[in-house]
Image 1 (cartoon, rainbow, N blue to C red):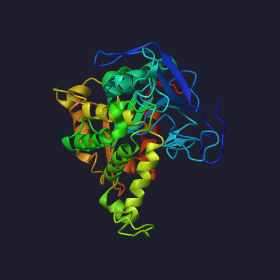
Image 2 (image 1 turned 90 degrees about the vertical axis):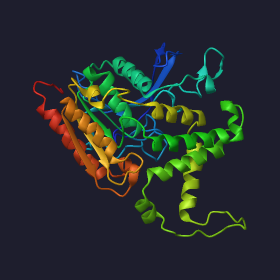
Image 3 (image 1 turned 120 degrees about the vertical axis):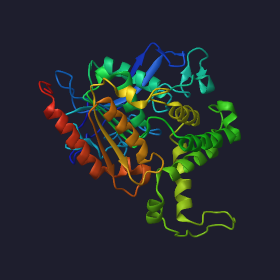
Length: 381
């Protein structure tokens, strides 16, 4: 149960776990058994019609809102989830789960392989965005929910949102993909490949078999540093750091001179403490392989789908540029699916979907409220 706290917070929350026997992956491989770590906020109504699924981005997890007991840092989207917020827990039952392949409670390469009694490492099968969503669909069924009021997420979470619309349209009433795409561009794949190569070039990676030894910390830190450069914009870096210098503490010629260098190293080092290097490889590859339409025109994916969509992008996002969101919107329009689109002015780059919450909150709240009131005969009691 959640302990209510003032200030619009859902309060103290605890992770929950759902396990099932097996999941047949899109590759044909079988993952067995499967555990999903998830959190919920708010209350499910009697008709089980007020559920919203939040899909996390690449490095996220199930802890989207509130506080874990004894911790001072809230969930990664706490500014958007809670009483009176965009995803209003006074009205909605909000769910967030850690994707399979992750390292925050759901089955992934760091989990124990029951066939060997050791961690999977590279014996873990390749996974897809579709596999992540298939596992989430099992969780939603376990919770007794026939149809989600909304599915929402940014970046990789937006990919999962689009996959829900494609794979399970009958189980989704509305969708909010944010700062995302229907498939990666060559540049997006290239950035991920450089990160993967940084991990695998670390001698401690040892072909994925590092769990009983030192992890590939330097390689993973460099991969994260590369990622953070793409998450920000030129303007946000200039505003945050400029060319401010740091005081040198030793005589090493290539010590940290600029504040931006110190920031990237801090981000890299902190990421290593909470994320698994093999999960980095598996999840980034799943993102690169994601292709919503495949060989078909994109609008054919949305044709006949009775799902209302709100697509959001950010003008300074050069990692997931607005043209990719606009492609999704055009496809929805051609398919005859109701779709709204907003491009938000922001200097934060790709990170805007996590930081530009005031404007996003108003848009999302309005969208959900209009959906709430316009669907005739739809009970949220």
